[in-house]
Image (tube, rainbow, N blue to C red):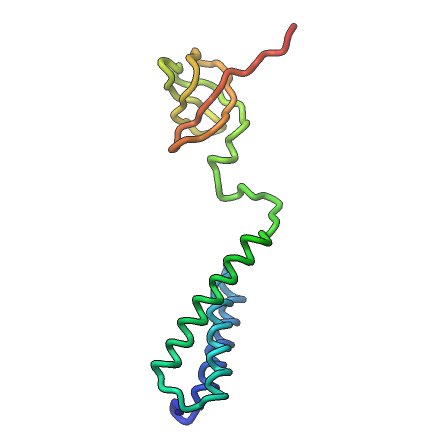
Length: 152
């Protein structure tokens, strides 16, 4: 089968090349798996040029699924090391930070200030101006604890 004079195998291999190059331009790692599926489909089409289009697309879909599953497993087993693993998790960055109570914590809830932000907080009762440590974040609420003062 040909597509405007081009064999289906060549079409799929060109699609794989385009997807691979696009992967280099765009951030993230996903299109490489789709490119691999297109390349496998292209090689299959070179070996079996008379396969109907439905089989080609089925091959592409199946190989895409297989490649994505292998890629997911790869990245799970071999995670990419980062110099700042919490770069996009602002909340996780706050754990361990010292905050100032902005609105007294009474009956377990109040507000605290950290840098230029004000956050709802939950923890032991504390007056305005007290300094607390963030120990967790639950649904956007900082969980704080009293800072143990060093013995004088």
